[in-house]
Amino acid sequence: MTVELLLSSQADDQLISAFFRQSQGQWRSERRYYTLPGGEVKEVNSLLTIRFLEQGDADLIELARLHGLADETAMTCGAAVSWESENSASGRVESKGSTLFGVIGSVLYRDRGFATSKPITAGFYFTNPDTLCLRTEYKGSVFEEELKLVGDKYRTRQTIISRAGEQLMIGQYLEKRLA
Image (cartoon, rainbow, N blue to C red; front, top):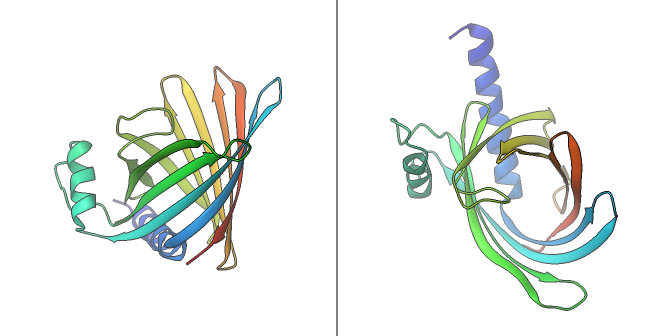
């Protein structure tokens, strides 16, 4: 490994670890999904709980097993996220679940994707210490996501979902820290 790659990997580890630590807690997420090109809008409110995972955590070891990694303790950190979402207009429960994130270098391992229950990976980078960008590809779709910490009480997120070069959906989120 070259010195540049080693330094870049260490910087990624420090940035993602700090980002996950700062995201730990409970959040209320107000989400708006725009279906393209028609522009149908769907609004969803979610309660998120985020827990930071240290290297060697049992959840990270399980995630490494799901991905078939030879070194089950290679993930330097991660996060466990659970949510319960309801439709803003009807109050009906939209979804409830959880997902795990783990990091090796500039790769984010997940136990499931946005549109699949199978394990996936995403590439990530930071535009600054408070802005995490992800790119995930599977089943012919591309998911580009930006998560931005705004002080210690807010996060914004934007997700763009594309297929065959055509944007299908934009999700915009304002997340407010509850605890």
